[in-house]
Image: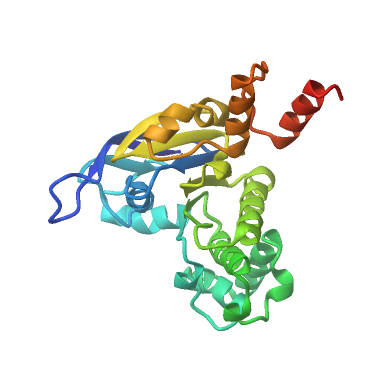
Length: 274
């Protein structure tokens, strides 16, 4: 479990703290979505989770290892894989399989173990057929999936992804999201997805909203994403499906809040008499 206890963070030279009194627990095997507008402190929080940054106040503890202790940082970073929004910043080799092998090689693993991990990781993200391809010839979504494979090859317990779809087109976004859902449900990998796209949070187990450096809301996707007024206050817009149901209710139709498109279609068909 990752425990964030009373964490605050300030960058040198800035008067106001970026994060204030953050308390949360990231549970094994869960899919957690962290929402927030630009400048809310999301990226800073991701870097605190694997020790790239150290809290100004409070503590971050990963499986009992405190990030304040320098001796723990190597083990923490093996447990917590961190992926950034631009995959080009994490692709370091000229061939896909060499890029995925980079992390395991730095762990000092045997050649056979590295080969097995690379094949497994590329299979998980659906990129095994591209193992001999140069990364720069891949699409944005494919690059991000290779970057995810590079982290998977390290076999982390937690994957923290900082807006991994922000630079992708809709097809690339769908590819990456499907990969993350499969990793969580089939491999049991704990996923922390940081995003400002509220639709990406609909399939999470739990949603948290960060605004102006503070954790302002925690709950299930249905509890959080249907609070249209609060989301607007926090600089976010509710999913289109939620807004559609809200509009239908203003027209006098008694529809419950839902997040799944198929449910809305069924309800509309019922309203139209089949």
